[in-house]
Length: 592
Image (spheres, rainbow, N blue to C red):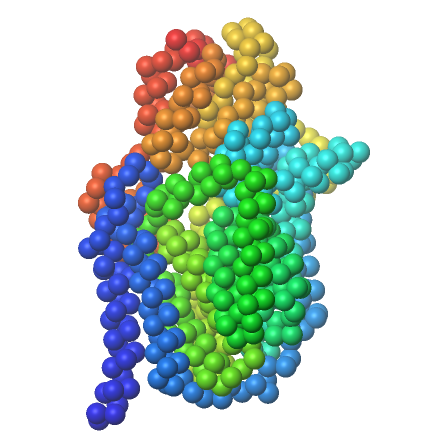
């Protein structure tokens, strides 16, 4: 009995510590209040504390299992030699490519808008392609330049074909989605998994990565390259010179994709370089110097303004409390218990890939603020997928009943993610599919007819905009469009040279007080403004309203007044702008 109690005491202690440190302690050490959209800040929940506690417990379990030799057990390495079937690696990306190509074709060929992430990216890219504005200094973007410039480069490259920017964007989205899946296959093949689990993880990854938002910001191309570079660098036979060159390129690519990815690569490669220097000589510190050099070159080229919005998110913008919903519990179980014990087992068995697995785990720990900051299904899936893979390394050595339980948990996590995201973006994708398929059934002649009134309404364009009538009011002066416009009116203003570019995308980027003040200041430099009837935005997020984000509504409550983005903008219009006319269902304002 005493022996059983001692065996159960450690996991029970870890469980209690995790529940207290991740779900309760952040309330006892609340973050500083700030003016920004954040359900966690309204609830007084400190996501940084949750991330630190989770990382500490994972490292503690690893150290305890390693030093106490409590994870000994030979892995069944005989099943690890078989890689993913080549046919599967080809088939899955091909299916993704075909499905995305069909949807993107419908959107482009029928001139249907897809406003969420697609509209945001295309609008920000237009600021550069049409007005020559400089990224980060004159164009707001919370991501790296490698998620911004490729569509512009492709459009320029294919200029003889007169490819639109939206079509170029969708082409890059498809390419990046397929590339991300191929990189995922590369990483999976590098890990000590059975063929069954390799196939399972690859299929689950492909299903969870369904690009329902059609945004280049949520594909494996953004989240996997850091791990693909680490897999290549940590190959046991890799020479110092080759590894250093790859670090130089990999660090720049990861920062070029997203700030947190660059940070994760730097932290993990530092840990690996120090370990290899300790084991094989100081020459391995070249990897660290190579990454530092790459960081310096990158920021000299891009500028420090690249981190402007990253700093806002680091303060807690758009954070939500880490709630004990199933997806969080599965992820934390993998992070704190299964993966660390698998790493310890690998080291105790002196497996050659132990440094590689540990380096990937360190990179995953560096991404914890992203996973547990916006702790919704998608952010946990994207930022935590490698942790789930590493947990699979440990599960492979377990009896079948544990493997079946873990398979069910993974299916629940991915299924939950797909359902929540499908529900969240249903309002955008449903009209596209409905209108597109309806008009495809009409044949080629039907594809060329104008949109009907109902179709225009579904697209957000009521067909009442008349440029000539607008020009009777404003002449040929430039016109600001703070809330955005449907495609047809925006294109008409651009063609007439009257469209006024804006640094911020109001509905996507005005999320805190300082940003809203800057947007108001920029908006007030214009003389005229065109606003669709009924347009306004009042963005807020409270812990009482997270059911659509998490799938469950737990009894979390606001203890601070939530910040409502858009209030200052509305006050500014009422006090400093005057309604001077209407063009159909569009209001025309003049600055007082």
